[in-house]
Structure formats: C-alpha cells, structure tokens
Image: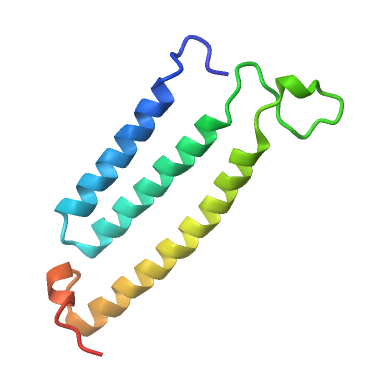
Length: 118
C-alpha cells in the first residue's frame, strides 16, 4: 500500500524511466546500450500499466468473496504480464542480432553495422 506517498510519484518515476530510455536510445551508438535503453523503456511502460490499475485499499482480484468495489483493476495486470513476455522475447531477439552483427563486423557500434550487406 502506498500510504504517505503522493499519488503522482509513480507517474513521475514512469516519466523518469522513459526519459532516461529516450536519452540512451538517442545518444548511444553501442548496440548493447541501445538494447538496454529499450529494456528500461519496457520497464517504464510496465510501471505505467501497474500504476493505472492501482486503487487505494484495493485487494487482489482473485478472491471470490471480496467486495467488488475494493478490488484493483485486473486488466492492467494482465496487460503487464503480456508486456513482460513480449519484452523478454524482443530483447532476446535483439541481443541475438547484436551477437550476429558482432560476429560479422567485429564491432558493436551501430554506425559500423550499417556497412553490412545481405
């Protein structure tokens, strides 16, 4: 429970995570750092989804005898689980592509990977 924490602090944390991710993505040339920036952005999106579903004093939506008006929203939680699975799969794919680029170019610099030809 978030007692004593203002309601907008999680949204500020989301803005900070996504801002840091944008900075990393726009300023770095290292492919691994770019993948890390995308992972940070995925974490910011997940925190945003969880924050949207939060209710003060709410209980988990798995109890059958709990009052309906006191439950947290289950849809953002389901979207967050889906987002985590998709993020893990895409990050694994991107890292495997970085390994493939490194084997062919000998570097993980994004500018040098542009010289690769099919």
